[in-house]
Length: 377
Image (cartoon, rainbow, N blue to C red; front, side):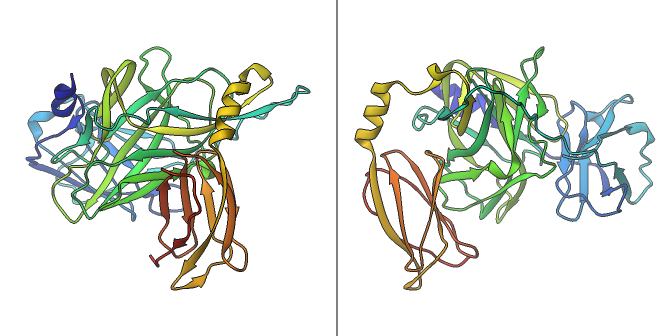
C-alpha cells in the first residue's frame, strides 16, 4: 500500500500541450478593481488556472479536450460565481474581462445560552504520518490543483485556530499556496461549501528549505460543527519549472482524501488514505464530560514546564515579540528586555514573530529554556 501511495494515489500530474489560449482579467463589478487568485476553469475537465495578484490570467488547453456544451466557471471568495458557455468565447478576441459581483460577508452564528460553556483545546487530524507515505504535486499540474483530506471530529461548535504540516521536499525557491477548508457535502461526501466566509484568502508562501509550517487561522474566524476537509491549493511556483512539493501521507483506516488537477475540476475521492494535516481547535461545549479526564490532566501537567528566554535581533532585545504556543493556543509577549515566560510540553508547536522579521517555528523536542535570534525578512 505504501508504494501505491507514493507513486499513484496522491500524484497530481498533467501534460500541458496547449493550442488554444485565452488571455483575460477578472475585476470587481462594483469598483473595477482587479480580483487576485480567482479560479478560472472548464468545469470537470481538469483545465484551469488562477489569476495573479493583478487579476490577470492565461488559460491554455487543447481543443480536443473540450466539447461543445462545456462551461467556463469563474469563482472567488466573496463573489458570486460566473458561468459562461465555451461556445460564447470568440477565439478571435484578444483579451477577455470578467466582472464578478461581490456578495455580503456571512456573519458567524451567534448562540445565546444560559449554560456555562467550557473551552477545550484539541488537536485534530494526522500528525504522525512521517515515514508512512508521500502526498505530492508533481510535474506540470495546473494552477488551482488541490490535495486535501477529511478531518473527523465529534459534533459540536469549534473554532479552527491553526494548521500544521511537515514538508518532505520542495525543489522550488518558493511555492504559493492557498488553504481551503470545506464542509463535507452530505450527499457526495466530497468537499462542499468553503467554511472560510471572511472574504479573505488564506495565503501562504512556502520557502525552500522549510520543513515545518504553521498557519494562523484565527484572523479568518473559521468554525466547524462536523467533519470538514482541509486542502492545499497551488497558486504559483517560483524558481523552477518542476513542481515537486511533497508532504507526509499514508494509508489510514476510515480516512478520505480528495484531489483535483486544476481550477474548477471535479473532485476525485481517494479512499483509506490521508495527508498529514493537523488542526489545532477550540471546542465550546456545555457538557463537562468533554473536558479532559483527571488522569489526562495529570499526565499533561507532569510533562509541562514553565520556561523563559529572550528574543533578540542583531544582539538587541526585541520588545513586543510574540512567542506563540500553537498547541496550547497561548501567546506570550516579550518585555522591554526582550524576555518572555510561557509553559510548554514536548511536542508543542512554538513560533516567534516580530514585524519585519522572519518567523521562527520550532517543534519542541525537550521542554527547556529557549533564546531566539530573529533575522530581517
